[in-house]
Length: 203
Image (cartoon, rainbow, N blue to C red):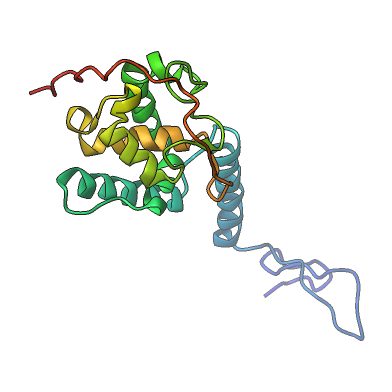
């Protein structure tokens, strides 16, 4: 108990000077748990902002799920248990890892005929929406797999295998947009010499 009633008790919270309808309020210090929660939230929000908005693109949960589904589809296609659909191939065309793998194979096997930027040359141009043998992803995959022997393009299915055929297809389709118009045109590429046999698949 405070011995001097005119001196405020140091153990009591001071009263605010204002009064509303005769009601006064204490100037009470916030509890430590509340303050630490507030400070922790501030630190977390700053770290979150740096991680997701300043350190480059970070895969979201949806991106990671899509990558896992893509990997499962590739494995199923490679094992011959299921044929890839247009939707799956479009999804693969938006997966950076699949597109990078497809670009690597395209560079070693397709650039000499179709160009480094898919601009065409000996082979057809692949960067516009005019297609000779079909512009749907599954049709592009079929063309890669079976070749166009009359125009000098060998069949790559046995050489690359289903997985790499799908990856090359994804790379080609990454230069297009799903739902874009497909213009069917007759072959503008002059007939080439008969297709040479592709290299034997690696053991």
